[in-house]
Structures are given as C-alpha cells and as structure tokens.
Image (cartoon, rainbow, N blue to C red; front, side, top):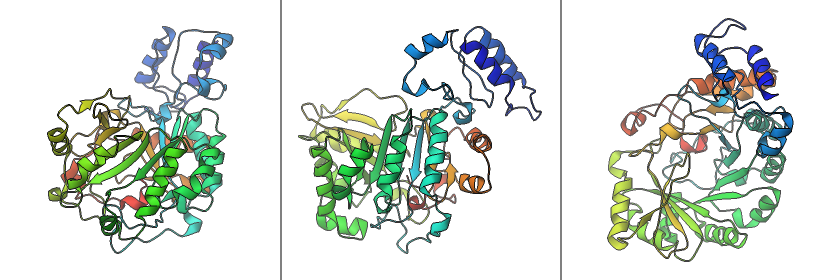
Length: 403
C-alpha cells in the first residue's frame, strides 16, 4: 500500500524545519495528519507527497512513465521551495567557451575560463542528472557558453537519453556548428531546440556577435526544420538602437515555417554594460507588432511558461515574449541551473551558488547531495530584485551561467 510506504519514508527522514534528528516540526507533524486523509502535501525533506490509498497494482496501471520505478517518488521536497514551487526543469551548462562574442552575453574583453579539471565531467553530469530525474525533474536543457563546442556533447545526450522518466532533452545553441551535428544529436535523444539569432541582417550579425557565421546559423535552422523540430524556437534579445527595427521582420519569419520566435528583454549581467535606455520592453514590442497586425492573437499559456505566446492569424509559426524584466514570472518558476563548473544556481539573477562538484569530489553520497540541493532550493527567494537592483548586484556574466 502506498500509504504505508509514505509513512515509513517520512518517519525515517530529517525535517529541514527542525534541527533534531527524527523529530518533525509542527509543519511536518501537520502534514502527517493530512496524509491520513489522503491530501497531497508533505513538507519533510524526504520529498514524499501523499495520494489516495491504492494498491501497487493500481499504481502500475495509473502512474505516468517516471513513476514506474519504486525508487522514483511523485515529487520531491528537495526540489520544492518554501513558496511551493516545484522545480522539474534542470538547465545544464556544458561549456564556458563560445565561438561567438555576443554583446549582451560576453564582456568585450572576454572572461577567465575555468581550468578543464574543474569543469564537470560527463560522468558527473550524468550522475547529477540521474539524481534530479529521480526527484521529479522531467526536462533537461543543455546550454553554454556554446554547448556544441564540447567534444563529447553527443555522448552526453546519449547518456541523458537513457534516464527513465526524462521526457524532454533540449538545447540552446548559437547554431554555428548545428547543421553538422544535429542529425546525431537527434538520434541520441535531443527533442527540443532553441537557436539564438538576434538579427536577420548578415552585416549586423557580425556587429552583434563580433564574429562571422550568419550563413552557418541559417543552415542550422534549415536543417532543424528538415529534421522535424516543431516548434523550432528562435531566441532574439531585443536591444534599443540595435535590432528593434527588425521585430516585424522576425514576425514575418514565422509566416510559412513552424518557428516560434521568442523576443527576450535585455537583461543585466556582469560585463554586458546594461542600462535601461537600451531596454526595449514587452509592451513596446507589442505596440510595434500590433501597428502592422492589429489582430495579433494571444494563445493559451502553458503551465510554468516563461513566454507569453501570440500568433498572426493564418501564419504557421508563433511569437513569444520573455518579459523577465517588465513582467517577471518568478511566481511560477520551475527551473534550477547547473553551471559548467558544477555550481547549482536556483535563480538566474541571484548570486547565491553551491558547489555540487566539490560535494561529489569530497565523496558525498547521493543522499548527502540531496541535502545540499534541498538546502539551496529552500533558500530560493520569492522573486528577483528588479532590473535596477539586479544591475547593481554581483553575478556571473551570462556566458558563465548558461542562461
């Protein structure tokens, strides 16, 4: 019976709200009482949530894929913060290196790279990914730097593809090396794709990225469409005086292709010289588009969505707006981030980090790692500090976070 298994798990747990071993605090004691009536809430560090009393045979027939194994619980309080947000989405940076130098991402003078020995190995990435998936994560996105500069990127995807319960393996890439590697990545298990592209003008591409390569990115987009990625998401950071004049051109790009262009507000990070005068907000973008397409239509938001989605009637693709500065979505955030050097960041804009790499290399077992992860998630704040305060705070450059 699942009721008996839940009680056993709770009774053998450490309560994160009480310092004494095996002595639950009033919040967890209350949750134990609620468990008896079948309500779905438990605040113990064991990550156990209740359900209606069922037999093991009932569970086999009714549970989704990532509940089929006995050691994978419905969801984990290790990944549930004090505001009730469940973090089922892990973003992993595979590399600090990049073959572009985008102005909003990397300081013009470059960054100091972490020595290779201090970056996560493939085995460490897979170990941590497996641990997160066992706790309820069902989506992993690989980022960078540029993830495709990592030599064993296909091996990483293959190993992640073996994790029972992982529903989505995504990647965010600049597209430079995509056309050559994408067929093998798709065969390995990659099933979601975002390509960063901030201009449709080749000459401006070189100015924004400080490198050549526009034709390679466009070839990568064509390859992704040919391979059936749908929707293929195009990330476009909009900056006043740089590319806001191309907003409608990007919308037109969705006319005949299953593409979702995602306009992203310019965000402050170390070294990117952010200021509010360069910020072109969501409402300004909407005004530009609605002048040309008055019937620009909103679509239904998905749970935990970062983007507000719209479509021009009759167009095949769609348009999203990620308004993290003017319309923050902290209340539904379900993401945590793992940097290339093994630090866990629970908020993109927060400076707080904890090293899972060091914990592993010191010999901590999975249960001990979960304690570290749970403590970090438990400290996650209700919302970010606001764009003007963020601009004054110390944080990594975007390239060393992984987006």
